[in-house]
Image 1 (tube, rainbow, N blue to C red):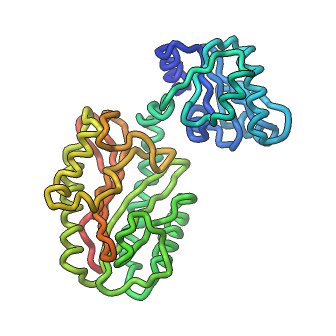
Image 2: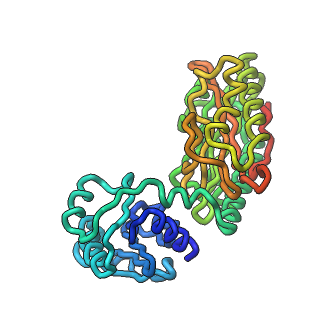
Length: 359
C-alpha cells in the first residue's frame, strides 16, 4: 500500500479529497489488478476497486488492501461501472474528485459530471509521475527482463547470416525470449535489413538478408509485467562506407550521452547531449526517432526526452537512450540500452556490445 500512501500525499497537495483511476496500466500499478474492467477510488482513509462478476475473485487475490466492489449490470459494460462509482463516491463522501484527464473520454466525462455527487477535477500525469521512480522489486524485474533481452541479442549473432529472412530473425528472438521465462506479446521485434533500415520501426518482413546489409534489430522481453527495450545494429559482410559512418556517429552520440547521465539532468539536457554529435556531423534531419524514454509496465512511459523541459532524472528511474540515423533507400543505424539512474550516475542493464558486429 506504499503506492496508495504516495498517492494520498499527492491528493492532499492537489486540494482534492478523492482520486479516480481508470487507465489500465495505472490501475495495475496502484493495485496489482490486471483485469480489463475496473475503476479505483482512493481517499484519505479508503481504497476501493470496482469491477464486474468476471473479475471478482481475481481482484480479491491481486488487489490486496483494497475493498472490492461488484458492479451489477451487463458484464464489462463500461458505462455501468461508472453508475456504481457514483454510488461509492456518495458513500465515501467525496466532494472533489480528481480524474485522469488524458484517459476519460469526453462522453464519459459529460455523463459522470451529471451523475456524480462530487465536483470533477481534471489531473494530468499523477500516477505516471509516481511510476517514473522504480521500487526495489520493480528494478529486480527490469533487471531480469534486461538480462534475457541482452542474452537474446548475443544468441542471435550466431543465427544471422545471408539468405535467411528478417522474419526468421524475429521468430528466433521471440522463441529465445519465451524459452528463458519471458514474453514479448504486443512488442514484435523490429528487424530491418539493407535499404529497409531507413524505417525506424519497420516490422520484420520476408526480405532476405544479403551480403553487405546492415541490420537494425529493436526488441525486448517482458518479465512479470516489466519490459526491456534494446536496439543493436549488425552487418553481414561489408556495408557501404556511408553506412559505416552513420553507425559510428550514432555510437559516439550514444556513448557521449550515457557517460553523462546522472540525477539532476533535465530531459532537455539529456536530449541535447544525445543530439550534439549528430548535429555536428549534419545528420539531425535524418534522426527523428527521439532520444529515449522511461520503461517499466509500458515499453514507452515517462520521462520522454525532448526539447521541452518537463522532467528531471532522479535516482531509481529506468530509462532508455536510443540515437538513430535513417537514410531513405540506403539504410539506417540505431543503438539503445536500458539504463538505471543511480545515486551518482548510471548503470547499464544491457551491457552487450554496441559496436558494429560484422558477421
